[in-house]
Image (tube, rainbow, N blue to C red):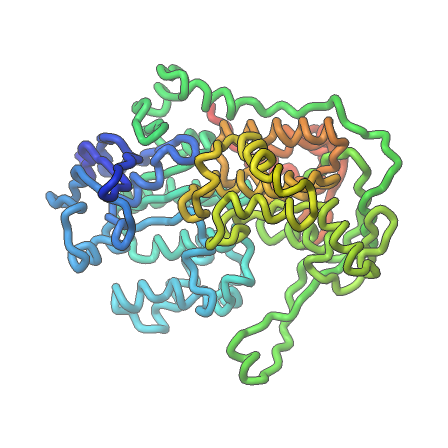
Length: 537
């Protein structure tokens, strides 16, 4: 029995001069109780297709034609008040980028509780109890404390878990999950997929799961749609798609995912040059409430980010830092380049104490050490074109003269798998994966000696992910680049790094060569991380 029918769906941007068709005649059905996966590279039309299912194109330049049939109604033709009875209650959606969908001035718990209070008419007390249970179900520790936290106090992975909890609050009949595991570490990802399976089985919720991660899709979905350039390339059950793909593009996706062997050659393991020397580093900060701040009220609660961390990073190495969300990976990276101020400890860069650098020395250090941040959207100025964003670091660090700007940025944009048509676009016109590629291009533009990559491939589809990894590896070899690579995706870390640091609760619990960590570890937590890595088989 079909619960949702999509017929000849067409999504386009048009004005009086032109029409750019982004989704081209897509048709498929969602059967009651199915878990349907939609997979494809960034810009393939996956997210647009899903947004059309609850008609989220109001006040946008996008136009939608075709039929989306739910309860004998074409959702595309419904008025706003009619849609409000469907959105959230009947069909709920988990969005790709949690940071842009959470109110920064509102407590996490209250944002989730709204659904219970407004839509289901629960009391505040009843809503509180239900929210606590939801937060537990998505593996957020100390939910009573986290209820009263604000989004800025959460890691990217924890924010995504909050979005998942919010989507489940109304017990929808259809759950659309748009890249819900992108920011999640492997253990929480595994738990989330188990949660989806349980919801599907116990509550008979029909699920549409959108992902560039073929491992996620293959793990949970019984039916798979492969999209490229706004067109369905192939559709069938999981075993047909994975074991007997018909289209070359599908074969390419499978091959890109399956390539996960670590490389043991080409590393400078014998280097004696220490680029970063971290000694007894601690990072903690006071929990701040913006309202208490303006009322001059003091808060005594303190969050601990890093606990007594010591490490040495040698020139030419590629060091992977892994661990679950909130383990301190990103905090450590920000601390060692002095973005996050340590509480105590010492950080030496090329034997110079970072705490004692003057302004000119700091600028030079920031050129030598470039960082790619986790959230691609918040890292780019929304008011600037991609051209301007790429020129800025060239101008600031005087990398080349004005006459060569265009040549340099075209070269950069092609390096990361985009073309020059993107140069005149704004960040909001790009997908998450495309924005991240722009961020990588910006980091590479100043010819850094050290690259700190904080989840740089989390928003990228597997084919582009493979290209970026290959690019980074080649840069490491060609430029003797030192790499600090932060990721929850052990499959990627295994492919790119020769050293691995495992973190939990702000501490380093294990470190060693990639081979030692993957094949000789005796640490229970590390073993859990490794066994949580998904396979398409």
